[in-house]
Image (cartoon, rainbow, N blue to C red):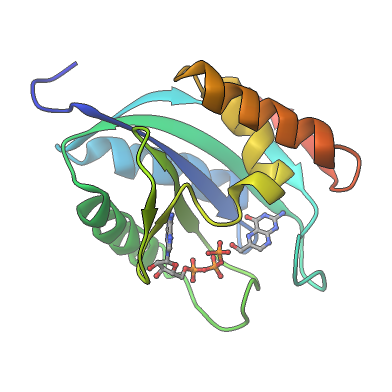
Length: 165
Ligand SMILES: Nc1ncnc2c1ncn2[C@@H]1O[C@H](COP(=O)(O)OP(=O)(O)OP(=O)(O)O)[C@@H](O)[C@H]1O
Ligand SMILES: Nc1nc2c(c(=O)[nH]1)N=C(CO)CN2
């Protein structure tokens, strides 16, 4: 690992507009190209039914593990810039998007501000985050257990299918 990349974060990726599988793959490359980020793990990609606003196409979702020297807010800014590069349009709340990048976890921090909530406020309700996260999560045992328990609780209520490794 390069010097200075001393924080670990888990980023959720989602897309349901255009060629989503191509988009999420390209997004991982763009994230990894940032000198302050190194991508050190990637889950499988999943085909997932929309949660929340349901009258939209299925998503491709996955989670990556990164090492970074960014603070949480700097990381949010960097990811927002990358979303913009993929021409994300914010129209309908929880509606279709070319690329959505969420910070699910950052070290073991808890942050609750108007701009940033970590763990992500919906993380434990979303199978499309939890299943891929469990594939790559190698942090503390208590968080691993919370992830696992949440999966057990909501499994079967949301449709997700692994599409590739
Ligand atoms: N952990 C987080 N990761 C990314 N964005 C976050 C996080 N916590 C709060 N936000 C804020 O959420 C704002 C709106 O995000 P966005 O438009 O992507 O919401 P959404 O994707 O429609 O819904 P959701 O946040 O439930 O996934 C962002 O501008 C950001 O400030
Ligand atoms: N399956 C799925 N559903 C969603 C998703 C997503 O990424 N995948 N993102 C949302 C808003 O962030 C709302 N609903």
